[in-house]
Image 1 (cartoon, one colour):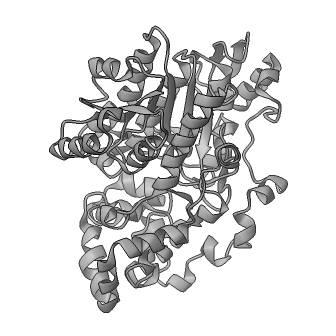
Image 2: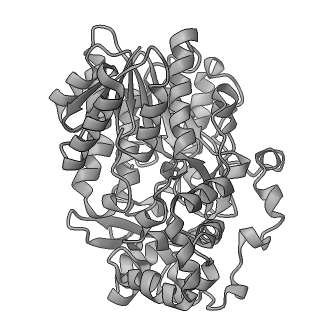
Length: 511
């Protein structure tokens, strides 16, 4: 079994590589960028695994490199990603890896004499901002990515390309929030942590379990030919024991260093919308098949505490001093919402709070903040139960009877789904063949019914940027059912971002 992997120097990728190489017949070609630290990593890998690991230096945004990477392989696993906060500062790097990389790999596989099977890791960030109104998602939900989130934008475009490329075998896995051993220090140099909404539903999975999932897919398919697994999109979840909120995450994470959200933060430091995070109503699909969800959130943090014994010393430092020296200094970081407020960045303040007036209205006292985790919106355990969400009708509609098997989808189903999106299905032959669609703006486009109805994509011309979901939601009920959870019906702005990072708002009637 010959496997090509990107992203093997990352947290998920390193686990996937290590655990895959536990399979006796696995040989892996690893793509590493030309950084000095990766040359050191290459030496370690060769020393440990010898000829079972082949190192290829290059970049996933290079066509020739992608063709060398996939040559002669049975599987290609694309885990490389430029994630926030780097993607917030380096749009070119995000586009090169998250969008162009996926496209070039798909193209390279298409040119193979015998196509490798492609596993493409994307992100649940594509579902955009969720809160207590619709905390659960499933594959097929609308992809209304948060304004100014370039990581999600490039992942969205890359994923759609893979879906429409015509590959013989592919699987798109949307990764949820991932806990890893360097969780605390990797978030201590940027204002990104303040983007986290306190009531954002976050379903955590460990890097270890994510890597194990890749190993299990490769292991099972190489021996049992998982024909019914391929050519679909899946959500990687952490299960009930991984479901928290933004507030919970700070509560448990900061306990490692002897603190809490209340001790280290102020409520207004945190953005109140425009984040990404969601619980998985269908995360069990992969779990039932591959049994990879082993680590609970509490256990992961406990492991992190044991690994980094220095964190114990933080308990000896007054919380007020930690707040000032470690977290307070990040308030002035260019990626911090409080910095945007001080700088008068109207576009970002509106995107992340709904405007300065709403930001000022956030309670200063933690006891006055309404929290899902505290039961202020109902029983917390019931809210986290996907079975209860299904029974109580708390899942989003896809505009047609999506309970039917994929093979039973009809032209009438396609018409119903398109009308729910404010458009029309003009031509339908087969669920896996490209159909002809028209959106509410009058654009016509081709896409397979699975891309639209099964994966949640819609008009590529209307997709961001600009982020004009205020306008689209007025005619697209599919989008409206989630967009208006965090936006007012009378909001009428379009969000734009230029290459220099300057954000702007345009009222839709002026556009």
